[in-house]
Image (cartoon, rainbow, N blue to C red; front, side, top):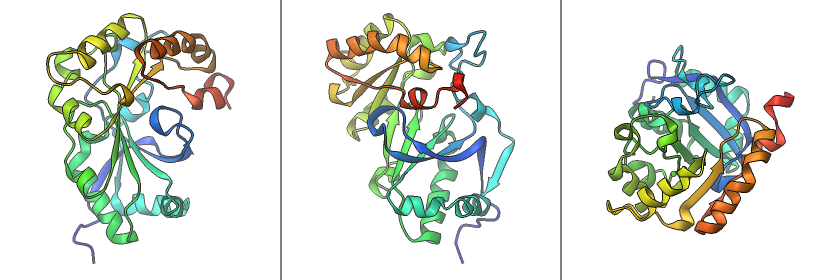
Length: 254
C-alpha cells in the first residue's frame, strides 16, 4: 500500500497530456524525450500575440484546467503506451507546461508515488520560466535538471512578475540551462545588461546560455535563425534551433 492515495491525489494536465518525441530546443536537443505537459501558468506572454496566434504563448493548450487526472489514471495512461519502459531506458521525462512548478507540491507527491510503484528514479528535466523557486529536493534527491526560459520585456508581462533574482541565482548555482527566445535586437542588450553584467549578482555563465529565434513554423525559423546565430557568436553563448519545427513543420501538417 502506498502512503500516498493515488486514487485521490490529482494533477491538472493539458489536453495533449503526455507524448514521446525528440527534444527540439536547448541543451538536450535531439534526445528522445517523454513530454509531460501540465496545465496552468503564472504568466501570459501576451507580447507575442498576433492575428495568427492571439494567445501569444506557444503552448496555450496548457491553459485548460479541465483535465484533472488522478495519479493512478496517469500511471495507467503511461503503462498503456509503454512509457514506463522508455523511462527505464533513460528517456528524459520532460515536465513542462504552462509552468509546471505552479503544481510543485503535488508533483513532488507524484514523483514519490512513481518511484514507490516502479522502483526507479526517472531522468527528469523541467521546463520552467524561472519565476517560482524549485524545492531543493528535486536536485538533492531526484537529480533533476532544469531548462529555464526567462521572459524578456518583449514578452509583455510586467517585470515584477518575470524577473526573480533569487530564483535565477538558485538556477545558476544548480547549473540550470538558460534559454532566451529572441524576438528583436533589443532582447540582446536586455540579456547582457540584466542577466550577465547586472548588479544583482546573477551574472549567468555564458556556457549555460542558449539563444533561440522566435518562430512558429519552419519558414519563420529559417528566416529568423541567421541573425540569432550571429548574436550567439558575438556574445560567445550557445545557439539553439527549434528542431521540431524543422522536422515537423506545423504549417505543412507533418
